[in-house]
Length: 235
Length: 259
Image 1 (cartoon, rainbow over the protein chains, first blue to last red):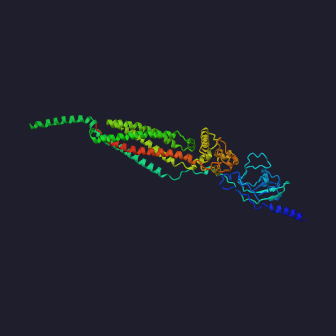
Image 2: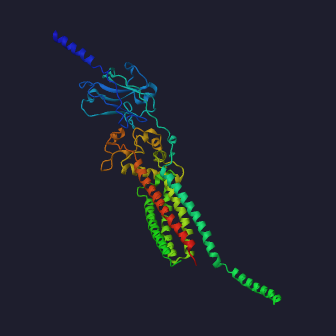
Image 3: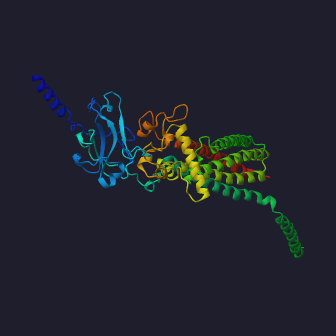
């Protein structure tokens, strides 16, 4: 009789112990660049959580609002998300969530080909608000256990590239110095060049201009003639 | 005046000045040729931003550098012969070349300021992998941008302008033609094995350090361009400052020369 009681206690204990609601699915640390993308988000894989002896299947429930897990219509494929507001994906046995020390991740929305429509982990269509939890279904697709809900997850949407301002902002000091000094130097050279040509051409004038020489000759001739005319009355 | 030792000294100084101008001119030409030969393969990126004036500055630099060399020879001959005609031609031609070199230096210095990360970011987002530009010329530009970015990201082991998040933070042509789940960033961003395939594609998509290059390519792009622009601008500036004094001296000599 005592053995009967022990068996019953064991059964009740195992049912109570398999309460996973304290576990809340978490996003991976922010150091991972692919934590949140436009159509995916990445969760930490639960470690040492599920019963390693069980053959029940663990599903990831992705929903856009809190849903009653006892009234899930199964299968709830990815394609029914728009109508149901939730879908189930990533089915795996409880024992496959093993207990090793390696970091492992679950990337929700990573399956672009969706070769298995009922369990497909397809890209998320909108930035939406998503909440997730792991549910454990028995062989009759009845919910036997579940974890807590995660917080709401919003996916980032890319800003338009046209909002990027390419204006360089303030001018660098070097550029201002260079431009102003060069402008001043160029102005000095221009002034110097004009000045040199004006001064230089003055130097040239007496040597190159020929006609005044002829006038001089004429003037002396004229003067001597005048002298001559003046000399007459004197004599 | 020719026999005067003071003038002789002045002539020797000017000839020395011209020798330096000639050598510096050749060096400027060489530097600019190296720049326009585009060893870092960055020209397509600049061309697509229609901000390639820095290459124009280098082309002008090739021309003016060689002109400085030739004119310095002319100047040396003119100074030695004390020939007013040769020196007048020298002064006028030198002034023209001087104007061009001033333009080259100012353009190079100005364009240097434009190389901000956002310039390359926007251009990368709008042109990378673009195929339906509708215009042959634009298509060639877009192809150039794609090829250059693939080359940069693979060879320089970098991703985007600031990092892989560039491909996530903004909508881009790349985003519209590729599914986000399979290509959160181009595959060229992944750390490759020696065989040229990603070390682990899943971890690369996840963005795990060691499987994805987390650093941006901005330094690899702007670094060489800014160095070259700096060289063209400030070496040109130094030559111009030197030439200024030589030209002033030549003007004084020209005014003093008697026939």
